Image (cartoon, rainbow, N blue to C red; front, top):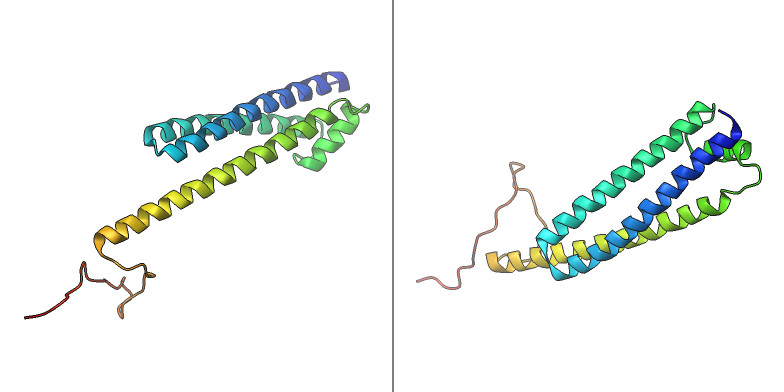
Length: 160
């Protein structure tokens, strides 16, 4: 493959990744609202759509790695840099790659924030379940035979 065709193919992959990252960022923002509302079906839909975008991003990454390998470079960031030095000596794609990295970092930040929200909601649900079951908030411990120590379902407040 000549350098021009390689650069065009790589540019196509980067543009596709940028498009997918923009879609993912939008989905993650929407997911935040769904998490806040507690809409389980909406969360399931959002999760499925997010997973589709992640699979498409993984496919794009696999194609980029394959392009590196095809030209004798390692399928990592250093290999991409060497491939770019060969097929894009004027660094025409550098801006697109930088934009791609920035977009991926933004997606990671939003995803991490959503994960914290989900964790907080799960903790509140667990606390409510603990209260309904009449259990104190304590760590799970093991009994003398290695099994989980059982706590009584309720308290005896007085005996006759």
